[in-house]
Length: 262
Image (cartoon, rainbow, N blue to C red):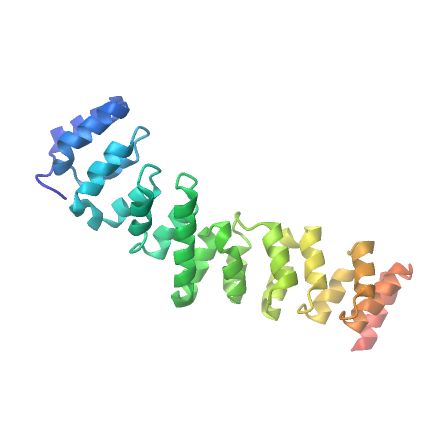
């Protein structure tokens, strides 16, 4: 990338240096050899456990290295990169690299926040395939926007993302504006519907299709049924069936009420 490329002997020497180097030795090596390092060499130095401010400063000083997307990402992730420089390095990164920065615990919190904010700015311009890929990888900070996106395919993938938490999903169900197709998709997910809080939120959401809500009644806890009865905005049939269950008349009576409703 800069100057003469290292030959095989040089690479063996670099490997030896990286294996043996402490903080001072690594900084000295980069300072003395930065003009001869390749992109892969620079990345190895930046990712070294003893990589520190002097190493970052040497790399930042060579503009040629910053033409590499991988180097820019590695610098943005590095905790020793000056904050202003790290934020500037995010500007030209594609969404996939921004996802890596946003969910990497090594990066300072403001840098992670900025990376996620840039993804949110790009979200309306992403294709369905890109949004689906993003849903699989995204940090928790992006979950709300992906839920609000309204795409059933995106939701289906997001439900398998380990960073999605119950609190975010239930808040979306009760406060935001889920689409009917999304609610149907969620109710087909056994893992999430096994959670009482999520099942209850689906039942209480005014946007849940009546048939779906009625199917959840018999597995609902008593306080949930009482809440339905007392909610003036609740579906009248739903409230009536909840009252039937509370009065101890059983699921069979509820099923007859459902059948008679058409």
